[in-house]
Length: 618
Image (cartoon, rainbow, N blue to C red):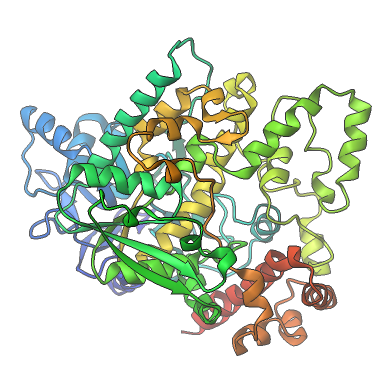
């Protein structure tokens, strides 16, 4: 926390309460820095420099103090450069380079960091607080400017622990959930708590906060003329370097492994860089349709890879983990992928402290189904406008607020992205009259406020879709779910595909090599031709999905049945109880397409129970 009044004393009991709320993220140690006007706290998960790397960390004269969650993968190179420049280090901690870089470069120090991080740095001579988040949003950071202070933490729990926050639902976050299946940064479900966007930093000085962007993706067409084989070779080199950096650790490192391309690639590249057996962790489902283990041989079944396999199974009874999953996730998502990830995390944490995962590949290579759908629909943009409108109207009944988007001209529209990616579209018949009134006049979708670079219009439509994906679903759904599920069990999940140098390189690869015909990730498959068995390298994508429809049709746990009762729906006031009853009836009669809508209603009701009632009563 930092106060607007620089000499105002910090409430130490409050600071300890805030820090303790994040014990699960760092059970190995905790540390504090308290000075007039500022209090920093951290719980540490010891990965590097276990003996002397405790935080907060200060510069030589103690005028700069840092707390940081994450890893700086290029710290050795930076450390050597800083020592040569006269800086003195007290620890072997990777994050100590940040305070010395800040001494030399101020906030521009962020440009030198290669890794995942959420940090807070107190600049005592300037009475200034710096909050910053890594480029791709791998690590979370929240803040609140309630009253005359800036409160912050990796999770909202730390800010709620201040008891200074008014608990009020942000109805626009609720609208996001039913349009995009997530809550768009900077919103959270609570109006007084915001997420710091990826690749941004916040300066809090003299009671005022200013937000700045320090990095962005650029898909501008380039004149590079390389053969596909040359692109594949260069890509493999980048992948090898990223995996090598992500293996940096003073504790054992394992990996999550599925039957798919992405995680198999990471594990195969890991096995090339270590002689030790790699612990791999796999998830199965009792429902055959969702069990990847039945879709073909997995990497650990090939004798040329030195892997140890550990398998967990997700069953219908695991819906009982929903309260714990949402307690850690905090903002509801239109899925329950946190539950499978939590089961994987629990199994992993019994043996390792760090896992490498395959998240991020679908974003940087365009691997989702809607990239193919968009490419297939793109020729319709050449049809006469009247015919496009007729085709658009034909799809409007199911997605009334997106009917104008799916056959638009070649320039990508925000609404088109919303239509391609939304797991469900908002339906005012589910919402209460009070919520509908509050939403009147608000923009369609949940992405109308996304700032687009001036060069965006000149990008290829495939690249435009990638930009949306990297700015929206990646941080606000994929990474959020991964971080919360893993940190719930004090497990660090690392994502080599999201090394920003690799991401920048992939932005240069022509779209025609990312999708050849309608085959996604073509260039990645080519790069891995001699790394993976052919049957894995060419396997179609099977996304990690929980069997929501099966869970909702099984006898619901008592808490879920109670939350969906008309009495509870009327008590919270978010939904039209009659419309939800009709939704449940239609779903029970076999309309599987309503499973995410029904799960979203349940999650919002559960969120209210956990964060508006139970937590506020503690």
